[in-house]
Amino acid sequence: ARSRGRSGRSAVAGMKASLLAALVLLPAFAAGAGAVAGAPPGWPDALTGRLAHIKDTRLVHLGYREQAIPFSYVDAGGKPVGYTLDLCAAVVAAIAEDLGGAPIAVDYVAVTAENRIERVLSGAVDLECGATTSTAERRQQVAFSPAIFVTGTRIAVRRGSAVHGYADLRGLPVAVVRGTTSEAAMRTIDRLQRLALRFVAADDYREALSLLETGKVAALAADDVLLRGLLADAGRTTAVRLVGAMLSFEPYGIVYPRGDPGLAAAVERALRELARSREIVWIYDRWLLRPLPGRGPIGLPMSVQLRRSLELLGLPPN
Image (cartoon, rainbow, N blue to C red; front, side, top):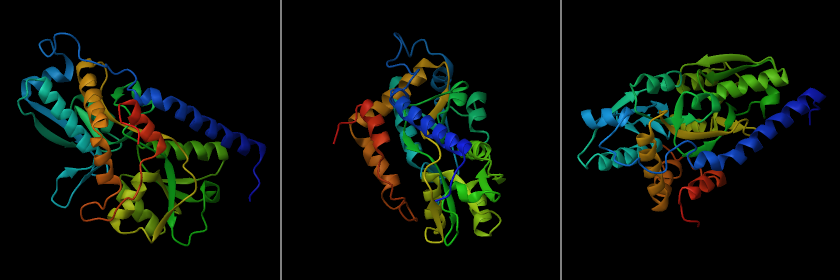
């Protein structure tokens, strides 16, 4: 095993401490910190914010990612599909019920890792239904649902590579997707460990994978589950492998505007009902365990952290 200096040990210890702190805070996030448990009295007669606009237009704008497999992507027929979009569909149904039961049309709006938060802030998107990590910085701008998934940053390398973890990347080029928390995590590790990494920022995951496969970078850093989805989609599960431990803590949530208690209540109420009925487990299995339409399976059982989060929402224990 390679020896580390005192600064290296301290950095690793600091990262471990941060991960433990995040795990401790997960129940609060799962319970929907800042969300309203019930609708305010008298609504929807006195709606404000996005719900008032949705009531007037009978239209909700759902943001989706084109390559965040299996959470949000475009299928062979050009339709946005995925795990998070199924959850957002339940939220839309809850909103429609609250607004009198008449159907609400859905407008799908493509977003990227870089502009997804801005699209919510601008009003172009009412619910962002992708694979977005709840961070303290982002929560200063937008609101997040209770946790819908928990993952972390991993490293993907070509099969046969001598890289077995981030410490083996010293001085090497690494692909990241611009605007992601995995990019931020890798830049932090690079700074703390003084690895002198050479970052190559891609606009999307397919571009990043191409950089890896053509040998332009030694590794690709992204969320573990998104790497698995990317490789399953591209049929590259044997040519590329994931190595090393998870390097960050990434709890995903549905994103919506801050300061909108009616919308917050609808989001949390829909997720609680999915948890109580166990339908959320069926939706999870459909996208994370079973073969994806036209693709191989992700094959990722529900984590202990996510199950605990969903139990706090009402999921019956096994």
